[in-house]
Image (cartoon, rainbow, N blue to C red; front, side, top):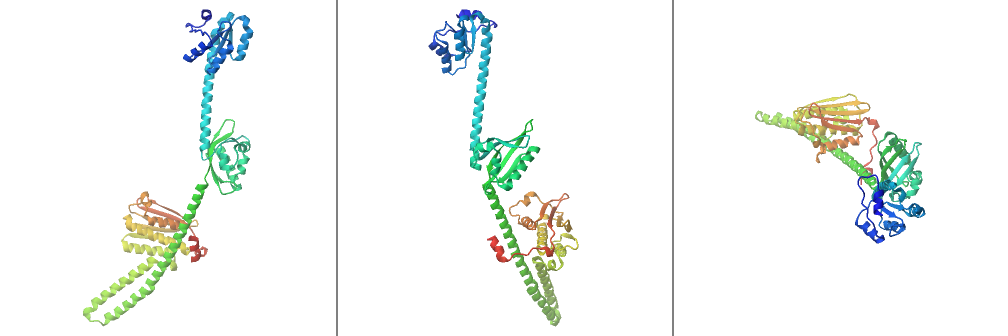
Amino acid sequence: MVERLAEGWQGEDTKPEFMTAAGATHLRSMLREQHWDAVLHCLNHAACAPATTIKTLHDRNLDTPLIIIAEPGDQRTAIKALRTGAHDVVFFDRLNRLVPAVEREIREAGHRADHRAALEMLHDSEARFRALASNLPGLVFNLQRDTNGKYRFLYVSEGAVRLLGVKQHELRGSAQRFLDTLFVDDRKLLHDTLEESAHSGNTLIWEGRLKNGERWIDMRSLPHRNDEGTVLWTGIATDITKTKNTEAALRESRAQLAALSSHLEAVREDERERIARDIHDELGSILVRLKIEAALLASKLPPDLSPKAHSIEKLLDQAMGTASRVARQLRPGILKEFGLSAAIECQAEDFAHSTDITCRAQCDEGIELDADTSLALFRIVQETLTNVAKHAHASLVVVRLRSENGNIALEIRDNGRGIAESDMDKPKSFGLRGIRERVQSLKGTFHIATAEQGGAHLMLKVPLRRSDDSLPTENEEAIQQDLF
């Protein structure tokens, strides 16, 4: 039989290797020891029935092509073998079909093997994806927007129950079910964000509250548009309630610290005013009386003691000047009597006199501000000039105060060594930090950097509030209740 099959093999230069199996046991042994391209079962010549051969291949989970070789009169048996699981039938009077039949079935077996491998890879990938999606702290979703603007969830992970309290099939059945879980005020924002992402291709970033208003979720996804015009978002929705609560607590803490800082600043200003008043009223009057007494005493002293008396008068003049300067620095009366422009010009003169640094003040006339804003801007000028004296190594400072577009702009420049970003981020940079806090309390903007021509450049703007627009201040008890 082997010789007959070999003679009928046509179409290849190299003849295949044929091996004869003596029975089902021998066939199992051969299949176990070696890989075979095909199995040819010759009816009426094999030691076992076709069903036995088919079962042997199935038991070993082999997809080896099985071709029935039959006599022309064995058509019924051959057809039955095909129905049982054989792949093809070749009759002895048409052995010229054997080569293409074997080659075709080998190719088909290879295709089936590739298909099974692809399916296994797909199943493995899907299993890994499902495992990853189920372990993520949130909801993984595929959301589709069709050309009519309708939304549909193609996939929803198991996190839907944990995040929303809604089962997966409910969300896949209706996207409205997802919207129903959201806080009413946040639904329109989500719809607008989806529409904007669909039309622009920008990443979907949305935060909103759930129905009870106590829990927050965050959705993020990059849209993909296909040729038909539908848009697909594959992303994740996570619970950010703890983050939002932390942010709220942080904002509240910052607000309390800002209120405390304002309260302490107000207390310090009151203390400065009290000390300045004591220096001006008590110490100033004592120094004036001393000067009068010294002048009277000098008129009655012998000529040889007159220089000593005049020296005492000069020391008293210096003490009176120092007391006046300290009182102005603590709480300049000129600020309350003549306004911010006059106070800044006076401060520039005192600074130039005490530091030998040229200081020019250019202030617009007619600027009327409420007391809090005036005092805050004056303290900013004081703090900035102090920093210039300590760190800038400058020889010129220019202070510019002007009114523009409903704001008060304060600009201070110097020709010193400038300021680096690292200087602004120093942990103990309390001067700049205090300026920033004052500006923020006035709802203004603040910027400081090294100028293009060198030196530091400070620029700030605060809203213009006139003295009659200032808000009534809270009493001390109410402030302390808010703080503590």
